[in-house]
Length: 323
Image 1 (cartoon, rainbow, N blue to C red):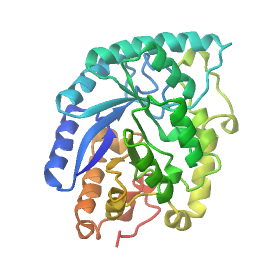
Image 2 (tube, helix red, strand yellow):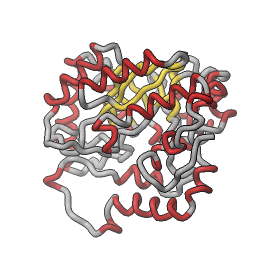
Image 3 (cartoon, one colour):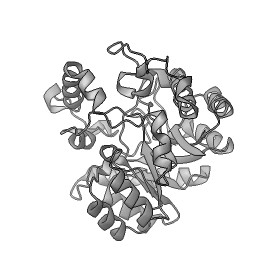
Image 4 (cartoon, rainbow, N blue to C red):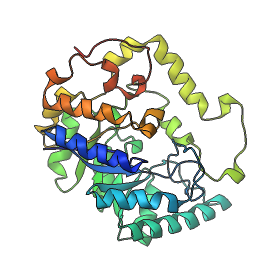
């Protein structure tokens, strides 16, 4: 059985749709959801990669029922504290962030959640010391690409429960096989449908500049000095080299999942939370199509290719069938 995680739905009926998806496929199951507070939530800590907004401003209590509902429905829940930004110890902002972090972790603990995914070694160490009952999972945004990096990191932090390796290494089977063999107690999960440029030279900087929620200290900047610089640069390049980048991508297609299972990796992650289609529920159909493709490629060969690639999933730039 292959296990998939997806973004936590924002409507209760969408949870039912996830359960319905599980009943329609044979080889896979959606077993977990992940979530971070949206950028316009006043309780966001700034340790999240705040890639999503919401239609109304909220506090943590608004989301509490969805977190509890996901756990009640049997989904494993992980909270994302996945900004790779380092601490600025001289900054007064850090004090406010740590206050919000304490409030957040206390609230999560009350819901029954004890798992967080991080991308910052300082934050990882801080949580291990001050909140030892929380299990730590690491994010792709650590962007480790070499075996020596993983080996040294896991010697430094042997408490790690699981990791999502960098999207860059999705097709480095030698590295993935060695990780699985050497660290049998660590859950390895791979992100399958992100669609980021392979070998993107500005991916790390992009992740470092995702804004945080302390809006009272934010300042408006020109587009070249804001986070929009990275997405616009990526979009401009991608539109010029779309077919080439699709062919070179690090996506893991449904018919390739069994190759990862052969080396012992059976946990995978589907993305999509930063799209309008996810919030209205239509993106969940993409998850169903992907998992049907895991069952049998022929189930999806006549579907549009873009359902397999998040970055073109909702555009008309590429109109070709999967076959």
